[in-house]
Image (cartoon, rainbow, N blue to C red; front, side, top):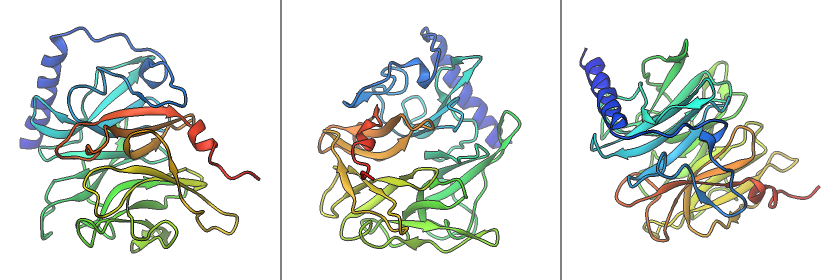
Amino acid sequence: MKRDLFVLCLFAMANAVSQQRDFPRLAGPYLGQKPPGVKPEVFAQGIVSTAAHEFSCCFSPDGKEFYFARRHPELNETVIMVSLQRNGIWTEPGVAPFVEKEFSFEPWVTPDNKRLYFQSGKPIPGQPGPPMNVLYVDREGDGWGKAKDPGFPFNPAKAMHISSIRDGTIYTTDISQGPGSERLAVSRIVNGKYQTLERLGPPINGEMQTMHPYVAPDESYMVYSSRRASEKASFGLLISFREPDGSWSQPKTIDLGMSAGLPFVSPDGKFLFFTGAESGQSTRVGPGKSDIYWVSAEVIEEMRPKK
């Protein structure tokens, strides 16, 4: 009952803000925005990227839902926002109906469009330590069901930022060893169950802090955030391609001209989205100001190994 009342309050507040200004008519893909070239541009300025702190985003596989995180000024909390395409027109971003009182961020919709994972500060009964868990919701009709705990091997506080491929394999950030020790990890399904998180070896993981993977649905390449443990805020994006023998190629930096993290490639493979900030600013939840940027995926294709 309390949860339902809270969600109703969120939508009431969002609607009140919406009524105070006219929302533009946004038609077509990508919230009706003009596509960028090979130079990054702020995505949907004034609509998605605002004076607030926005970061981490994804589209649903059909391109009709856009999710992102915002430090919501009216709620004084970081929550997942959503804009939906209905009859070809995009709705004004509002608080996603499945979030609760605790902060939420890093949404990810699986390639089959049936499940959405996200990071949450919601405590899970019986779990020790400060809450930082992966939750998920499943499709129910035209919406989503109640948030659930996936349990092992992702919780409690073992994983952050989910990316999954077509066979269900999950790539994530292993946070089990505490701040500063984050590394990329994978969990594959065996007999219907996810296996223990396995940290990737060289050349993906090494001395650098590695986080926030985006893995192509066919597992052909991976884009992720990286920085040295001694650095305080500035992240950059690296890309690695699958070799014929199944190994990962030596990562290369994607030069975007700014601090960048939390990558996502559009379902059609045409655009790279990322959380961008001025040099020295944070691209993560917490102090700082960032926006969501996009750029042509030509920046990826230019780095793809030539056959």
